Length: 108
Image (cartoon, rainbow, N blue to C red; front, top):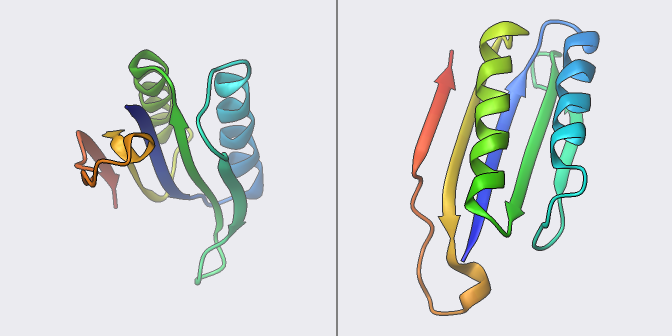
């Protein structure tokens, strides 16, 4: 079992996007990760800076720590809007099980 965090966040300034991106990179540094980390900065359809993430950890604790960090920053940075989720991810087990979100935090 692996432990996944996914986020799609939009900001009002590139500086706030950069702040979030750096916080995420610092949090995941040195953690045991399964598969490729998908973490990118881009621009939304309406021209707002955005930060997108999909990462799978080997431990549930690492997933929970990153989820808490991003959720806290979503409230403080502030994020204009975004969706953050976490879930146990059985893809490494090849047993046909589907992912089911454990927790979702949305800011509109």
